[in-house]
Length: 331
Ligand code: ATP
Ligand code: LTN
Image (cartoon, rainbow, N blue to C red; front, top):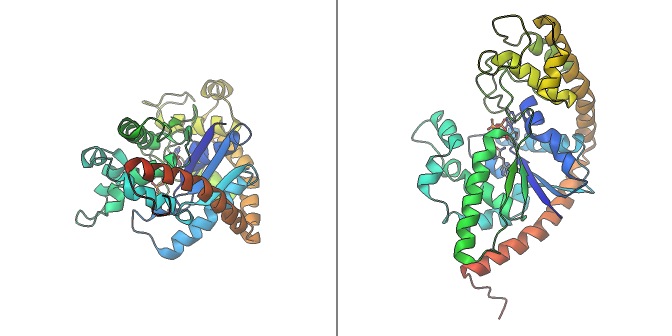
C-alpha cells in the first residue's frame, strides 16, 4: 500500500496558506493509502520560540489535524519528538548530506538572513537532514507539501540515492513530493509578492481568526490596476491570489473560477471570495474548538506515537545494520 507522510511545524498560528497548501488535502489520502501526519516540533526549535507558545501550538495543530477530517483510525497522527527514532536516525544521516548543498537551501537562506548572523543555530542549517529522516523512517512514497517544501523533498531524494548506492538499493525508499494544482503557494493579502507565512505574518488569514476579521481582511486585500477579474500572476498578483483562494475553497480549477467572475467588479468579487472562505472555515473552526476543549487529541497522539514508533524502529534498525553499527543484543 502507498505510504503518504507529511508534517507541519507548530511555529505559530496556522494560516489559510497552510490550510490550502497542505492541511486540507491530507485527508484525501487516508482511504487509498497509509497516512502518517505529524507535528514537526523539533523543527519548530530551529528558530527561537517561546516554550509556552510552542506547547500551545502543538496542541492546536493536533486539534486542527483532527478538525480537517483526518480519521485517527485510518491515519497515524503523532508528534515528532515522541518518536525517538527521528533524532536517532538524524545522528546517522547528518553525515551524508553535505554543507555545500545545505547552504544552498532557499529556506535556510531566507530564514538565516533574518537572524543575527552570529546566532544562526546548527539545527536551522541541518533542518533538511531531520526532515529527510522524518520521511524515510516511514518508507514514504508520497509527501504532500506546498511549493516551498519541494526543495527539501528533492534533497531527501538525493540523500536516499546516495545511501542506497553505498549500502544497497533496499536500504531506503525513494519518496516523491506532491503539490496541489491549485494553491501550492498562497500569497500575503497585503503584499501578494511574498508567501503567506505563519512565522512572519503579513497579510495573513489565520485559521483562528473570527469570521468578521476574515471578511475584513479579504475585503481590504491589495488588488491591482484595471478592473477585470483575471488570473495573471505577473500583472495581477493580488487578483490571482484571491482567485486561487476561491478556487481552492470551491474545489474547482482556476479557469472555472475565472469563468465564474467574468463581468464582476473587484468589490463584488472579493465579497464572494470572503463568502467562500467563511463557508469553509466557520464549521472547521467549530470542530477545532470542540476537539481542543475536549482534550481528546492527547489520546490520539499517544496512540499515534505507538504506531509510528513501531514502524520507525524497524527502519532505524535496517539503517544501523547497513552502515555497520553493531547490535550488541544480536549475535
Ligand atoms: P514558517 O513561517 O514557520 O516557516 P509556514 O507557514 O511556511 O511556516 P510550514 O510549517 O513551513 O508553514 O508549512 C506547513 C505546510 O504548509 C507545508 O507543506 C508548506 O509547504 C505549506 N505552506 C506554507 N505556507 C504556504 C502558503 N503560503 N501557500 C501554500 N502552502 C503553504
Ligand atoms: N519542513 C516542513 C515540515 C516538515 C515536513 C517533514 C513536511 C518537517 N518534516 C517531512 C513533510 C515531510 C515545513 O516547513 N512545512
